[in-house]
Length: 174
Image (tube, rainbow, N blue to C red):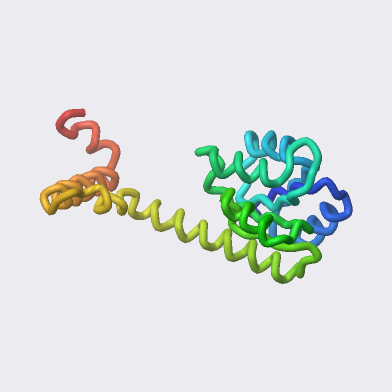
């Protein structure tokens, strides 16, 4: 199954162009404003959002702010693709949590490389935490004793998670 990308832009020509450019490698969903995009995020497993900044109803800055402040969506990379190219606009977009800010007119090769990079980085992070879900525990330790306790806890959890389900039913305390 191809990764799903949501493109949000009020310009139909841009939506069609991006769909043509990206549809060979990605499943592409298209919406014309941020409010419609949020409805898609509620029902679809979107891996990346590309949004224009200047749109009616809800602009790209508002959309980015909502995505990055919502626990369920905050992991989704957001690329702001816009003609609004002042330094102030770029800074605002990045401060809102955008993962990239690309100016129109843009290079399709640059956009494709940015998408591939963001998706690859997210996959590496996901794989890392899936293989070591408690890797961050050392940052919670306040002393060497805490660190030893948390490492023991992590080892025990890892051993239990590798135990066949028929054995875990007889585990003390279950």
